[in-house]
Length: 353
Image (cartoon, rainbow, N blue to C red):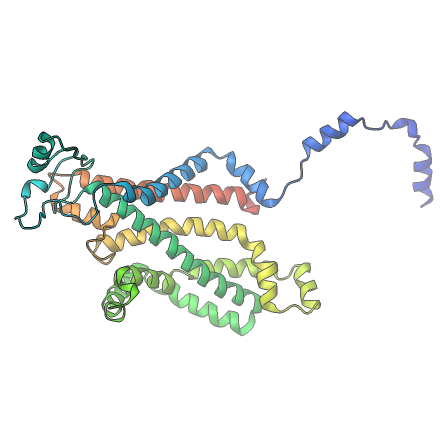
């Protein structure tokens, strides 16, 4: 203690100069106040690939939502089906920007006919609007399936990680059993079984407009795909529940559910966002695969996978009908994956330098 006093006594006030107002302002500018979320957004803004992917996702989503309201053709309208007349087969299989004979006659009479940008399919339906509707279906399934996976995985993982013991042992054995099942085989079997059974249950209800296939897809994701999210949340909860602020909440008499909601889950939000962003493209790919093999959405509602499947019949004459939906699937899945990787790089504390 005496040594410290001697050192302080040797230091003269003249050895230090007071900071000027300009230096104080400069110090404030160099060290602005920030939060974890703002810091992550700043790092994300410096990732051009993630930003381009995010812009593509927004543009595709807006197109899928807005265009069906302004497009003159419906996704299920067979343009050759004129009431009281036989179907004019010249409407079918039109190439891009090609008009049928009936449309050409209407144009000769001065009537304006909107072009078929991607032509028509084998049933005479405008292909562009079917691709747009297929994109809407794929995005809807991807977002809602990921939401279902998030809710189930969040509840199961947080309860298992926080309470531990026999609860954790029981939940993790269920997770191990589901992990041991072959994914695609179980998805196909469940989709086929649920499709038949749900058709009887939802008949005459509001859910009938959604379709048994769509509901079965959501149930399949809810039954099988929550395990990865649950294990991720459980690992985060196990690491966080030993922190001092959790111990202080317990000492104060807080219940376990309150601690999970107010302390543990908010501190897992960055990991949750990253996992959900990477789960959406997986859900879209699974939906497209099931639609491709005929277990997707109900006809005549299109899906990108069902459009690819239908295009196989005329692939030699109309290869663009397969290329267009396949390209849309690739752009959506690639953009979501790149954006998810950007979120992980920006918000994962383990990757921060």
